[in-house]
Picture (cartoon, rainbow, N blue to C red):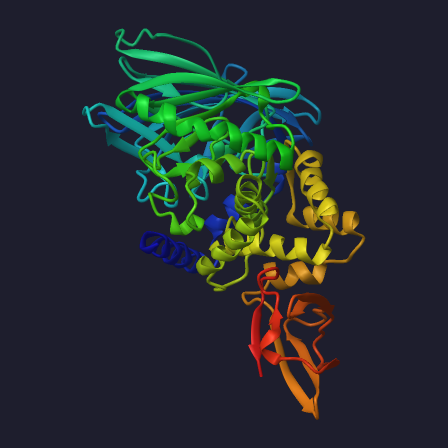
Length: 544
């Protein structure tokens, strides 16, 4: 648990440093006309990786459709990487740079509706990860056999930290080809399916691996994993189809991984039950061993939990259960974050809240309802209530790290509030299906929930997502003879009036607190039998 607390403090510190948006933040996070003028349809990333020099070199072929006519546009690439040239229709284009933004001047006007492409050639030493994946970049490591072991992670940091692209979550290509050239004897594992591999012409010292992604993919999900990998395969058989499962682990971990990864198929069955079919079926599902803990890279999930239970072996974090937290959590992201991606990282609660809640549903599926209740309430230990879960928009700044566990507990609370599991579970599956392979705003998800429930839950979401604190239920007992009156209210945002369940003995009943004090006659009862069902609602309870 100590490592987790350190991580949460680190995330909080990084967030505090980013609370005053700069010009650099705005260039990355805002959708100006230089970005909205074109829609990326396809990337071909062709990259050579030299582990000895910690050096990369390559090009991105950017295919797009013009949304409006334009002469100039913005792409993104970190300042420490050099752009050697940009080519369009056989000619070099001029460009200027401001921080990590690159402004490209075309040699003619691109007409609205036109579909075309340009190439950006780049090279340099990419940022080295400080503490992947939370503070990401390239992880240049050696395995136990002293062979190169390289991986990249860039969520939050940005895909433009290592390859040129339109680095905004709102624009995903329809498909992508990743060509990776690595020293002979090593394998490169990227997203999607391996089309082919071959020896390159670079003095026969490099091998090329071509990976094709056939679905939309957000930029931070694009990855490379380079190492002395062995591959073994399995299949998950659903009601209608067969999903390819591929595992890439270091050569000396194969036997251990074969046994450990058996938990994938029952997990997939649970997630398919709650969220419907795996969203990247044709690209398959893969776990790839990495030198860092984990990351939800689409169809090539980074796995670095050392084949242990829990979180680095800490099972208290998963309420004493015996599953591998990284496998379950990062796989949940295939639906929440990868299939459904938010337009702005300010709304990352959609990714992390729903994904963390997928753990809760997994526990319910595997261990039962009571185990689920215990698991979700165990998540309260990691909530800091330090600031709002939703971050500032258009400046590429996330909200509180509470988006994980507080987001999950908010959804658990919403389930209790709706008080109709059939409706709740069908709605969760509906979100996963109706927004599949799309980018969304957080408010779109809220509007969807409002429509499906027939309730206006905007104030509920404002309380949990836009305010640092959670609602506090205040109460006291007034005694008159043998009769007891419950006096109660919410200490919360204006107009917050969420009903909650309380119990006397074994009987649960609803009460309807508001900002003003209210009274309810309870008659004669033992006060010690009174309990607020804060196991069903994420609230503070204060007896006055």
